[in-house]
Length: 201
Image 1 (tube, rainbow, N blue to C red):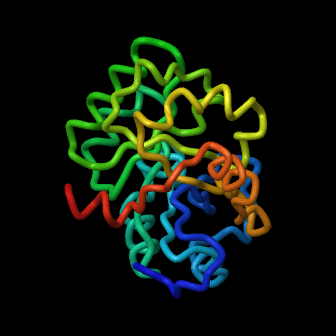
Image 2 (spheres, rainbow, N blue to C red):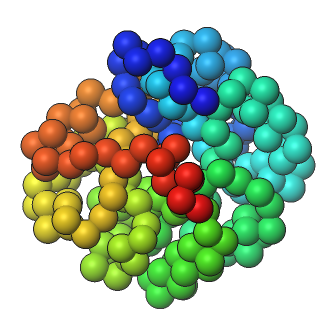
């Protein structure tokens, strides 16, 4: 699941495809096959919206992503979907944690699976990182990080968490991390590689 070392980015774990079929930002050309062909990162994971495919296309989703030698993740929209999500097999979870008690409890249920839990674009969801367990990974998201003062929002937490840097691509031309990587550099963040995390699961 490693690409060549000369690719633009070390990893990208937050990418949507046509399996996120209720998201109007996803274009028909954004197939798993095209993402694999573009090959913009050494490690690639697909994490389509759980609520869009899980009840109708889970097996097809997993088969197509794995056939392309990419990691199989999913993006979960809060606590309401957690029980169903934990009943299915994924390599990792990307989780929407809004600043409500139920969503923080949902984190604990996801962590109980032993799979990596990535807190999705917390600055965009008003997530209180002080309430998030340190065993989670926190995302620096190229689509949303510039919506905040990243030094003020993430700076107090750089020593508490491991971080991942993601594109949150919904279209082929979104497969970029330039803003997120600038933010991570200014914050002094060293990205956690999902492969290393999974070897300790």
